[in-house]
Length: 160
Image (cartoon, rainbow, N blue to C red; front, top):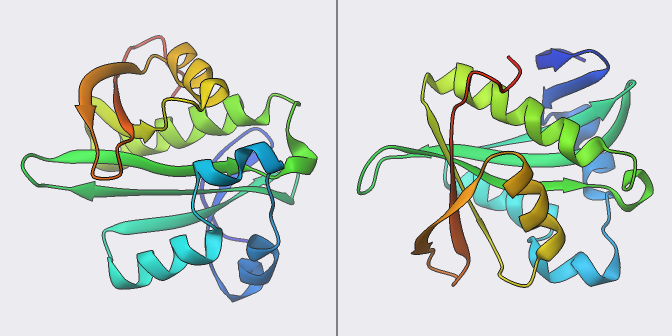
């Protein structure tokens, strides 16, 4: 397992042949199903749109989640923390926050930017609460799916 980025026992790894099938087996609670596309759809989208980078999230060497991010320059450069999920079996352990912070730190370093963007459905209250705790605020925009856009400006208090 070749890490792209790690902190303590949390690791971001590129999607590859050895983790593809386990990634596809990750699942969410029924109430979360409509908030993120199936991982198979995300991976297909990343194959067609090479600006998307899908990654596997490992905790103590066990696959626990998935994320996808990318750099888009229309109409201006923005780094999108686009997809994020922790498997139902690992939710409620603080891993969502730990991995969101880890991915954010990785994105700030990888792209040398001070702002990150994401979008969220207005009724995904649990995710909104997490993102707000991480410093994201609504910027008044909506994406093409009607999701609300949030932005986080790098703060030196964020862990690196």
